[in-house]
Amino acid sequence: MSAESATTLKKSLWGKSAGRLVSTLLRHDELAAVVIIAIHLYVDWYLGLAFLAQILTLGLLFVIYRHRSAQHPWVFPRALWLWTLFLVLAILPALRAISLKDGAYYYFNVIFYTLPMFWLGLVIAQDVGSLRRLFKMLSIFAALLAIVTIIQARTGVLLFKSTRYDASIASLAHFELGNTGIYRAESFLLNPDSNGAWFALMLLLPLGLYVESISFRAKVLYLVEMFLMLLALLFTYSTGASIAAAVGVVSFIVFAGRMRYRIQISLFVPVAAVGLIIVFPSQVHSLLQHASTSAEWSLRLGVWQTGIHVILAFPLTGIGLGRYIYILRAEPYRVPAQFIPVYHPHNSFLELAALGGIPLALLFIALLSLALWLAVQNWIHADVAARTLLAGGLAAIIALSFYSLTNAGWTLTPLTALGWLVLGAISSPLLTRSQKSELADEEKEGNLRIHANQHGG
Image (cartoon, rainbow, N blue to C red; front, side, top):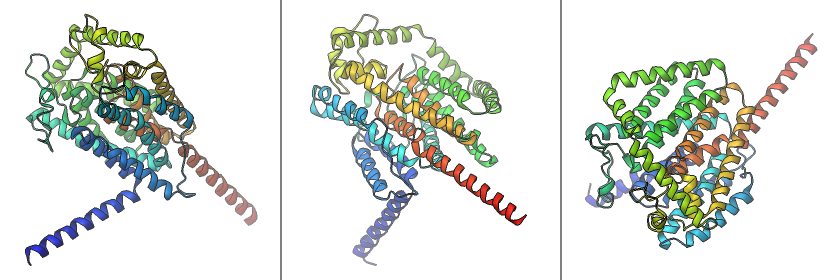
């Protein structure tokens, strides 16, 4: 075979493989959504391409819309006018950024992208089975990232690392824990706190799957996934993420559905904590020591105070949207307790108010609250098995929201996309419709059986 023929054959095989992959993704919306999350994390965030996942998300929404049917209905977000107002109101602060590129990046990734991802979650969660598949795939992806983080923490090697951006992130490449010589694993999130928040959110999904499942093998798989994510979270040594994970677990216990589930999880948590202390005593000690450092808390308080001063100075329109604008324009308002400059006020809600104004922050909180309320309504009307799945999603969103009080959570693009996808899925009205349809079918089938028995009698 000639070299030209070999090249042609190779291209043909690659083309067929790519075609099969695209065909598979189009047939499985949940898998396509997880692939988009992976692309958004690795390509858009880690490699800095910025907008590829957004294009794919809009394309997937278009494909789902084109293939809508009675079995796979289309749905619009509630209060679409509120979403429109949120997107429009953010345009002016985005135009006041330090550069058009920086303003566009923040607007499209933090503000605009919330709606497509939330909408994607709405239309993917056609029923409880779809929600279960989405959570399973997200859990597998998170477990793989946990393995990458653990390997980086133990060996210093980041798998699938790109050298293209080594120079630009050299100052962020090593996060030492004080003067201990221990380095916190940042993985593809490029920051250990953000990496920890990722696992604080994600480990609650397999927790819901574990409680919901009746298969022993499946339960073992979910336990392994949770262990990997918990270990990866430990190696980030993130105080905020660890507390957020604890808040998420408590939230899951509240929404678990049955008392025996609450008791099981309540017993499981101390056992897992003791296991971590026994197997990784030095790492747990380092985390607790880092969490109890008074300088860290006083600095964080100073950062919040600076953020409040900026908001009071620019209450309506903020200082402008952007990734690098805060460190420049917030300097005149920095309080003495904040002894170093920072890129954001370490609170997503303060960040939105400082960059875009109080009205923009209030609109964001209103949209988040509305979606959470709809998710809780789904939980109320769900059966016991579905409640455990919804409990995992609700706990994940609560964990992310709590983390956002101490750092950039809802305003960090990988966490933003993931959070709104999960929130859209658990608040989808299609979940309630499918359950009502199943109940109606069961009732109809029961009536037919009664009628048949009476006729036979």
